[in-house]
Image (cartoon, rainbow, N blue to C red; front, side, top):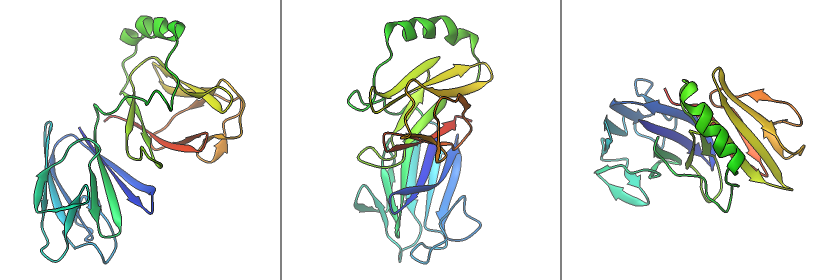
Length: 212
């Protein structure tokens, strides 16, 4: 599965997920990934998604295709590659992406791991993910494959995301104004997460999405 997230001035504006197929990128409304800007060609590039293989090709001689700061005519995409098109960037991710950085997120404790092992086989819903929306790790994905995931640091905000039979639910272990969901304080509420919800923990923005 391939995920493409379009960014403008460091902010995510749209995300797309594909299992396979030919994905066209450009300004024209007939494209799959539409970037409505004159710096983008009507049909700028095409990506062929075939299992674990994703080949991107430039389609306009007058509009360069840049992957990881290098001009290319075609190349195979790898996880966390950054595609530059005009004034926009597109971050490419695979679903088997990066694990949470130990410096940024607290690991699960033994009680949580024990609960995970008992509940995982009883829950049959799509896997959830968090994608980092800004900062040094922009575009990276944190898979939520466990029945319970703990994120954050004590004193600056800690949340628990629980995987239940009816979806993913987020609650806070600490009542902090800097824990937000869709620009609203989480406080002491428990919220069911929906596709494209934006979560902010200690000024780090992440987007929640379900695998299709």
